[in-house]
Image (cartoon, rainbow, N blue to C red; front, side):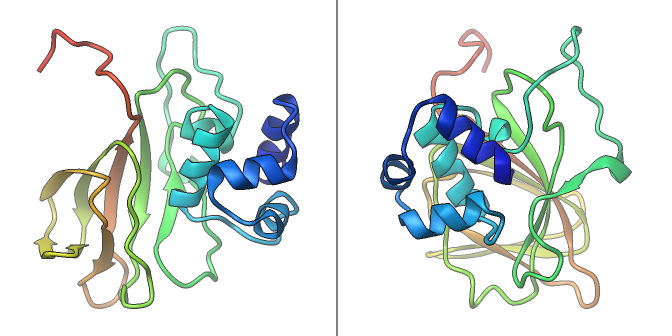
Length: 189
């Protein structure tokens, strides 16, 4: 992602200051991201993508889909989007190469302790499906406990964060973030 942010910024003839202002981050922080000295959260990455005028997945890799519109991501091919030694939730990219997506999928492994993590909000919608373990979606109004096979769909402008409730390994949660805007198939529910 490091060189991708810089490349997208330069392709748009945008200064570091302009992109930082449009994304709501400081110039020094953006410089650290571009130099690989800091890894932005998914919320900050989404803000950078909006400021650059590109889909979220474009910030991670060149979005080149297969001619038939099918992208396969094997479990061993999921790419870590957060450093393994970083405290907090861990994200893995899924289908990063798919072009023209209306949603961006991730595997989320929430931290056990969410107290130090701030609530996040962003445009669009989220869908969470607990694959393994137990997790809790935390909202300012309370929490929702989820077990294997449980899911939750919500407006992502609602401040939220997650934590693992399982002892031992972190829960594995499929996270889908929709792109804001009109539904691509308005005739479908």
